[in-house]
Image 1 (cartoon, rainbow, N blue to C red):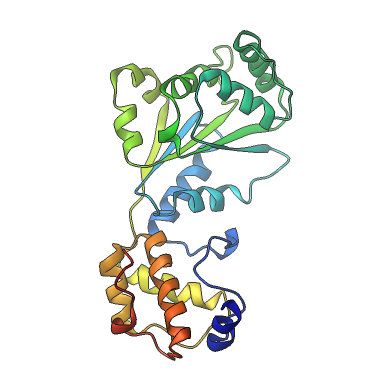
Image 2 (image 1 turned 135 degrees about the vertical axis):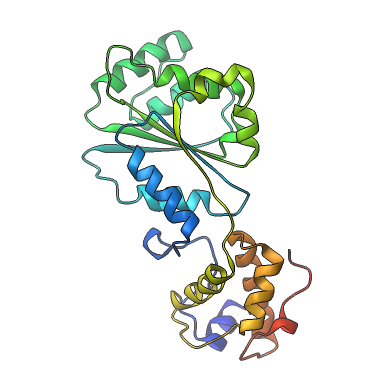
Length: 261
């Protein structure tokens, strides 16, 4: 089936997938704003907050913004949000710093602070799907960025999460943590122009330079997806598969599958 799609449309590989390189990501206005904020904050901020609806490109934005980090200055640590405790967070960060963590939280905390204070590369911890982290783990972020005797930022956490993360952090017991978050950005879906350009860009990077989706089809895709990249990918991909089966040279509005989005 894959060969049929590639041959019919002249693709070098399947488009609209997850395997896109950081330098091939289509830069929307929302992505550029969030990415610029991350780059600005890495040197001096303790915690940076990126939120947005599922599929809007938060993870891609963070990956794009951190892909060119100077490896002589920064150590990138990527964590998923399903962290059950403060102890687990301390241990995962130590592992990311290439340090074998102690088993007990009582020893892991001082080990972390010693390692962060002595590190020659600043740790940058990406906590993706941060809304899934246990409250205890989120609360630990305040302590982990508290180096009272040093005005420098010794570690930066980039929290990426769904809109519910904003609600979670709004609870009173997170007041002191929120005070440490000076930079935040809420990402949105693409507008119509960006959605059309995103579709064209997705085809160009797989070596398809001729028009494939009609203008009307692209407008319909925007209406049905609200410009959310993940939904655009799903709708375009299924339309391409069906189009290859039916030997379509152009995908129009009537050719878009009805059971997606």
